[in-house]
Image (tube, rainbow, N blue to C red; front, side, top):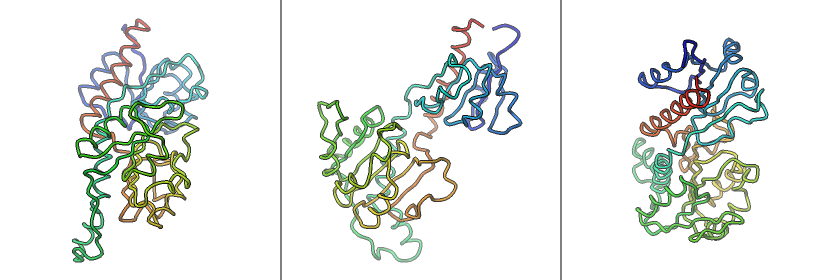
Length: 305
């Protein structure tokens, strides 16, 4: 690539192995950065910028010499092109690799809620044994509703079938699936609903008060997609009334969550995780490999450096 290597900045939240760092350093001068003002000069003169997800627009707008932004995620919406100083900056994501990890996380939450594991653990630890415990939900033969049928939705459906669940896939407006059902039917018949919708304007508060009321009473709702697709006031009311039997959240409207955004998060029939559904050993290795490989390929093949 020549004697002068391009400057590649890496978001400090990305943890690379020694081997992965050595691969990058063969092609780039590598520096780790965060959102501190002390790194301002580096942002202005970097050639490549590798990020995990969201980065402040105030920083993205100062990438004056940048030619390439790599996102360690499948979604490109973390980098709005209108905030970049040069529209010719190439932005690349990674292919979907977390579908199995996320699907496993969905069912970890489903089991926690269906089997009342939070309350059961508390009862044993406090000497209450089975006091006030109701019979748990048996998943075999129950209806699993899936809203959003991309790679992750399909992986969730496959795992549900292995548990003997009946799969109800919601049709996308304007596009009916061969095995799909109307959304209203999925909401009214599903015992468990798993959400896998992208963060688009039309999906804001997609699960609202009206749609929650259209669900079967006692439904378990899981969201590992985007925090913006839920109406949180409606969720709280539904949990209090028993319309929702359980709630699993791995994503939130604003991340990171420094304190519970709603007091219902501490209820025994609610489980929250810090956006870690994808965060497994195998998935992280695959994500890093794609992130590094794409950056090296762009500079070595496209720019012929």
